[in-house]
Image (tube, rainbow, N blue to C red; front, side):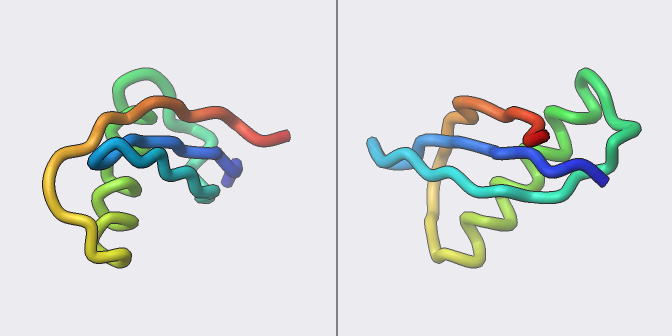
Length: 60
């Protein structure tokens, strides 16, 4: 597992969190995993509506 910082914007507010993601994921699979984590984060924090994924970076 590798840790990634995931950032997104929802209703003009930027959110950012760190999540462990499988290190074997690349390309579209990695983006899909990050988007799934954003949806989970939004549900946990009662954020409804659309979001824009603004960044994801592996943390060393």
